[in-house]
Length: 257
Image 1 (cartoon, one colour):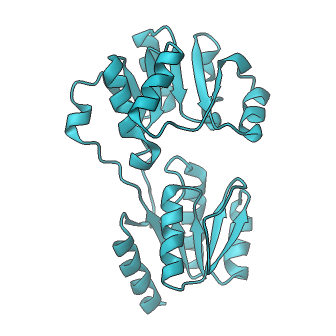
Image 2 (tube, rainbow, N blue to C red):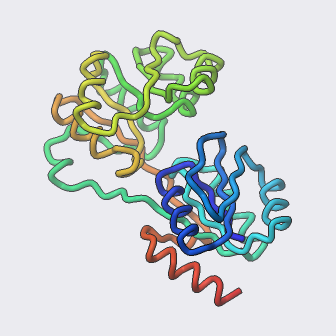
């Protein structure tokens, strides 16, 4: 049995490949959502601590783990790697495309931050009038020291779960923008203009996270962009970034088992 941590574009790609290859797998997400169309997969949802994860792997005889979850799902990455290593199970990281064409970055007022704390310091130095945080509802707490003192709009998914989480954390409801991430730079530009944004905070979440579109929109308005770098993976991950590489790695793992 193959264990897939998904909830992303990459997770759906992995599920699609496993279906085509007639592999049995479990597709797991943190929050309940519409799973991809699956012929050979089982869907489960809910966060797993390391004890629950280990029990699941043992009970379902998991032979390989594919981590295709969001790059900022830090605790999941750590847990999946530690549990897999403890059980002697190969753990594969199916990575997304982070490359940004040089012509898109050229002329953009942008700064990379190694953490959200560093991003806050950069934004304070930039002193914008109104920041848009396109970083998701889970970053409300880490950005608290900024939005409690300065004006910040927070864009979150248009779901009751996201809005309830934001309100529970104390974020001003009037500063929430309930919408899915714009998929084109023109849509992103319209959002920035509509809310009078003069600084954009985002994550290094690659092409599937629409980072190039965010960069182009900020560039078109000559506003600064602060990008929080993705966490680096440690441990025993086998990193692949194409389906062909994934197929070869799974075949190698099957031969070694």
